Figure 1 (tube, helix red, strand yellow):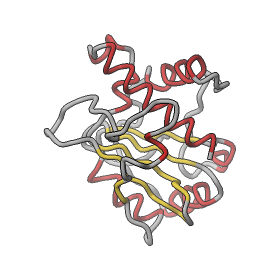
Figure 2: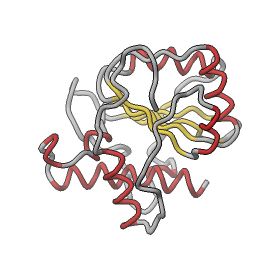
Figure 3: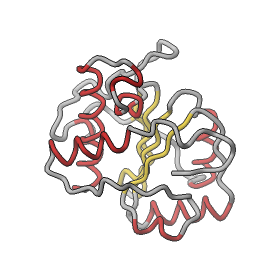
Figure 4: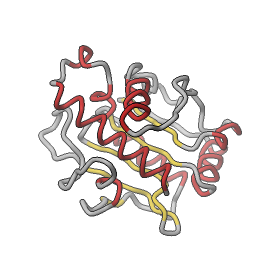
Length: 190
């Protein structure tokens, strides 16, 4: 998702292509390799079942964008937010603008998103270290449905990148892709 505010929404350029290729191969999905970049206020957002938002800095949604994103999520869309480090202080107020009545709640390790094809019995894998904090997965739940999954202190998108970009071990790279595959499988099966 391309957003305003000056944050680097465009980081991790190899992440989504790698995740798509992994899911198509390992889960026999048929995700188009040519993903779309979309803004939160674009009416075409309703044609996209899964949106990924990442970055390090400021995020700003206009009132119209917040309203459009809210309608998209209520209507069956899904948003994955991956804090690439430094996004937290900006994304929380913007999501509060989208859903003033909802709070991000930490998902328990028993949540199905952690138990799809790949088993993550202890929750999110730790991909990159920043503040010596454990990885956390937060959700926004609307009428019993997870509509937004916010991954914090894990950096999944960095792990999806070409291994040479962050010099991750093959095991770390694979764990990040497996968790991403779980998320896509969960979204497309629910």
